[in-house]
Length: 119
Image (cartoon, rainbow, N blue to C red; front, side, top):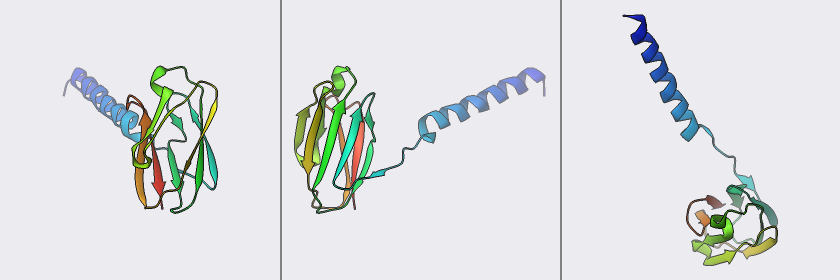
């Protein structure tokens, strides 16, 4: 096999590996919340995966540090919550999930996502 074909094959394999790791390699750990949890809104939600127990009141404190207008609104469809998140202000949202499962939340434009996992 000529050297140029070997080089092209190696570059192709490395490109596939890089693409796979970029899109599927980074998995954020879920954070367990007890009573309340501070969530920073900056280029997304940190933490973006929250584990809470069912039938337990929980306060989620969102602080938006990113001026991106997309992150201005928070939507939690399962909990029928739609809130504006002013820049550099803490907004507290109280929930008490009744059923177990995974419940997504997002910005108003559905570009940034998070998940509440109720156990």
